[in-house]
Length: 150
Image (cartoon, rainbow, N blue to C red; front, side, top):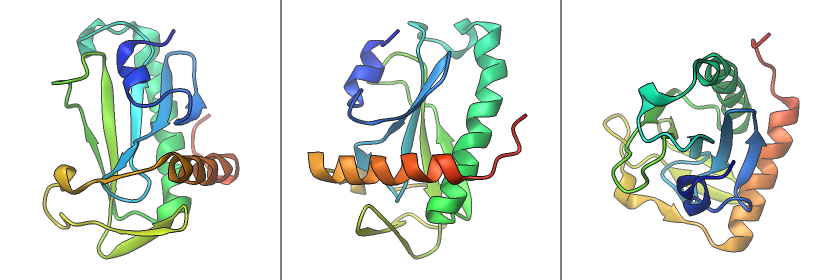
């Protein structure tokens, strides 16, 4: 099931990984290198309205995200922001945080807000070719990332 929030974040062009209850998408506006969207497939507009199975699966998805981003951008911290003000369906903005800059998709991106809150307004809006390069690099890292998920 694809809801309006998933579509708004560029699905299917931004799809990195598809799970039963969640999708992981490349965030088309990169706050930092490797910024993602973790979106519930449900039409729910409140976190508590998700089915119990979605919460169980979310643990595995987060472990996969963190293992992949550790390999891809070697983040120091990671922020999960649930900002459902414009896009109503349950989703998180996943922002890897680091001091300095990191390379992804052939571009160097600095964390302009480090060590404070992420600078969402300073995000780099990717063009179609850049989205494809970033997405493909992260998909490749996904397959090779070690995970603690069972």
